[in-house]
Length: 365
Image 1 (cartoon, rainbow, N blue to C red):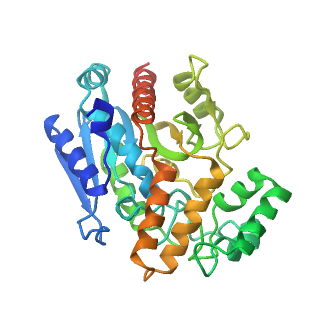
Image 2 (cartoon, rainbow, N blue to C red):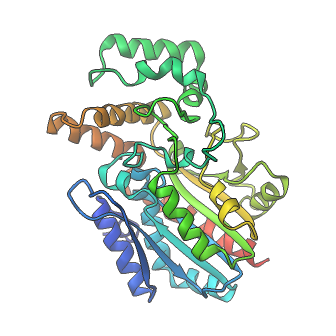
C-alpha cells in the first residue's frame, strides 16, 4: 500500500481509528466530543481534537476536516499524514506554532456518507446570529420542488426540466441558487438551520478552549467537490477584510502558482455564501488576529456533484428506501467527494502539506 493511500480510509470508523492511532503515536492526547447519534453501522461518533504544541502558544494553526461530512475522507487523510510527518511537526514546534487538529466536525455526515448534519443542516451555512433576520434565497425557492422530486431516480421529465433551467440560466447561476444557502426548507438542499446545530456548538467550545490564549490564529479547513480534479483551491475563509485578505494572499500564494481566491470578488469556484463557519473565530477568539482559507479539492464536474446531493437529499426524505438503492446513492455521494485513486490522494497530500508549511511560516513571521 502506498504511503498516500495508507493515510486515507473507506469508512468513518476506519478514519477515526487511523486518526486516534496517529495522534497516539505522536504522543498527543485526544479530546473526544461524543455525538448524540450513532453512525451508519451503529458505531459511536465524535468530534475528536488533538493539540500538538504548548497549551499557551501564542500562535495557533487549526487544521479541520469533515465540515461537510463525506468530505471528511479527504480531510482526515491529510490530518493523519500530517500527524505522521515528524519534519512538519518539528518545523511548527521550532516556530512556536501549535497545531490543532479537529477531526470530523460533522461526524454524522461523515459516517452516513452524506454532506449535512443529523439535523439536515449544512454546517458551513449555520453560523448566524439567529436572533436576527435570516437571509432569503428566492432563486432556491424557485428550484426546491424540482431538485428533490418524489421519486428517485428522477423521471425523464424532471431531468429535462433541470436541464432547461441550466441551459437558460447557466451553470454558475444554478450552482449559486442552490449552494448559497437557504433557511426556508428544512428538508431541502444547503439548509442553514434555524438555530445552532450540534457541530456548531461543539466547535465553538473547542475554539474557546484552545484559541482564547492565542494572539494569532490561522485556519485551514479542508473541503472537496468543486474545481478541477486534484487541484486544491485556496479560498479566503474570513470576513471581507483587506488586511486578512492581504495576509492570506502573502502566505498562501507567494509563488503565484496557487492564488488565493475569494467569494467576495467572484474569483472563487464557490458561489457567495452566508452563515460560514469561520465566523466562530471572531465570536469565540476576539483577541486574535485571524487568517484562514478553505482548501477545496476538485473531484468531478459540478453537475455530477449536485446530482449526487439531490440523491442524498431524496434518501434523507425516504429513509425506508430499498437497501440496494440506498447503498447506490451513498456510493454516488462518496465518489462525488472523494476520488479513489493514488494520484488524486498524492496531489491532496502534497498540496495540504504545502499549505500547512506556508501557514506556519506566516504565523511565525
